[in-house]
Length: 324
Image (cartoon, rainbow, N blue to C red; front, side, top):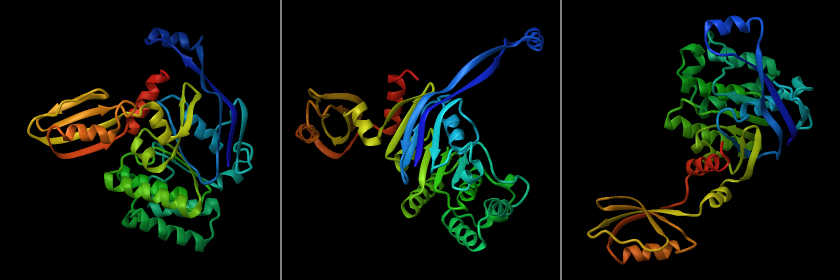
């Protein structure tokens, strides 16, 4: 279980104007600004949960993850993960967590990936049998194969990310922190990684905290999201419930033959081209089934689809609502 209670973290950042003259002045007198990365942040995450931790750049996501990993010490507040304070019991804590930073690497750059894996094995003191079983399973599920013999510097970004995920899981962590885990992956690899993470959670009850700007990752993997902005938790809730909270409107895409149907109260025309209309419908004014029947009575319907607000639209709306 993760308990994050009243955490505060402030950075002192040096500021100066552009230009050589200002650079010389800064050698003798500097101006500083305090940046409140986290401001009284609190939340709980139960064992086995998969949570999406989202927010714009600079919102405080990475600072939160680094505190939970034991890399940073907060100015105040409490963080208890699996009964331990990360920055006070770091050696014991890191044995039970796995971390993937999309913009950072834990692989040695100039040696084959398998050498990095063996170093990870020794660091975490994974016994040989468990290491071999985990390596075989991860290699198969993530299609590592020949990549294990290749130096990390020779891998594409997508190939490296698959190896990074494998490296973070060799010691069977109880908690997995993923920061942009599918960055640079092609569509097939993204699906494979998502399926693997879901399998990991289902079989081992691994707790997963996912930070990403890819809302397809959020929708595919998580049911709960935490929205952070300007160092504060702004929203905590179920993904489907939040979509309904933001907008219950439905989008109808109708393909037809012949005369274009007319819309009525409760409907808003979003887009139109020959043989197709995109309509936004408010279910509180007209039921979806009645709306479809109304349109079908006016023309020959070839195809019709109904969808709610997308995760991307929901997040964009929330960012606008909270001015972040």
